[in-house]
Length: 335
Ligand code: ATP
Ligand code: LTN
Image (cartoon, rainbow, N blue to C red; front, top):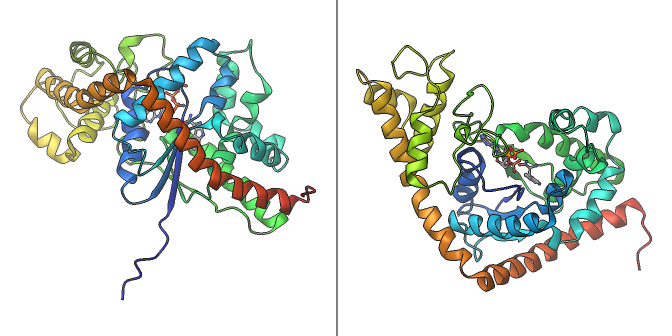
C-alpha cells in the first residue's frame, strides 16, 4: 500500500527587496517557487536583512519590502498553502546566523564571487554584513531544515557554502541540520541582459533597456524586446556565439513551454522581426495577470500586513525549534 503519510519535502527561498524584480528574477526563480508550491511544504521570504548590506534609504527599504511581499502573492503564491514572510520578523534568522558565523572559515567566505564583485563595484561600503551575507543565507535555509532551495544559477556558490556549513556543524556537534540541495531550473536559470547578453539581466543595471521589470507597461515590454541585441545571421536557432537570440529563445521557451527545437521549427524561414514580436507577446501575456493582481493587492495594505503577520508566526514556530536544538548542541547554557 502506498504510504500517504510520508513527509513532504521542505522548500525555502528568499528574494531581496532591492526594487521591482526583473523578468530574470521571475523566470529564474519566482516561477519555480510557484511551481514547487503544489508538491512541497514551501517557505518564501522577503530577505530585508540581506538588503541592509547595500544601505538602502530607510523609507525606500520599507516601501520596497511591502511591494515585494505583494508581488509574491501576485505571482500566485497562496498564503494558506505556503508560509510567506518577511525575514526580519523572525529574529531566529539573526540568532542562528551568529552561531553559523562561528562555523564558517574566513577564507571560504572570502572566496564568494558575489562578495568580490560587490566590493569592487562599491568600494566605499565594503561592510562586514556584505562579507557574512551568505552565512545569513545559510541560516535562512538551515532553520527550516529545507531539502531544496530554488534559485537562479548565480546563487549556486552560496548554496554550496550553506551545505559546507551544515556538514561542518553536523560533524562537530552531531546531526542537526538537513543538508540542502539547490534547485536550479534548466532554461530560466540565467536570463541575460537584453543589451549585453553575456551579462545576466539585473535590476540594478543603470540602463533600463537592458532589463524588463515585472511591472513594465505592455508597450514598454514590446519596445525593449524589439531593441534587444541580436546578430546578423537572421536565423532563429540556438547556437554558440548567438547570445542575444539564445537569450530570447530561453525567454520564449519559459513563457510558452515550447522546446528550442519547436521554436526553431516555428520560425523557420522567418526573420528576427517576427520572432521578437512573438517573444514580446508571450512576455506580455505572462506578466499581465501578475501586474493586475499586484495593483489590486497594493490597494489593500491591511490584508498584506495580516498575511505577513500570520506568515511570520508560522515561520517562527518552526525556526524556534531548530534554533533551540542548535543552541543546546553548541553548549550554550539553557534554562
Ligand atoms: P541585483 O541585480 O539587484 O543585485 P538580482 O536581480 O540578482 O539583484 P536577487 O534578489 O539577488 O536579485 O535575486 C533573486 C533571485 O533571482 C535569485 O534566486 C537569483 O538567482 C535570481 N536571478 C537574479 N537574476 C537572474 C537572472 N538574470 N536570470 C535568472 N535568475 C536570476
Ligand atoms: N541571496 C539571495 C537571496 C536569499 C536567499 C536566501 C535565496 C537570501 N536568503 C535563502 C535562497 C535561500 C539572492 O537571491 N540574491
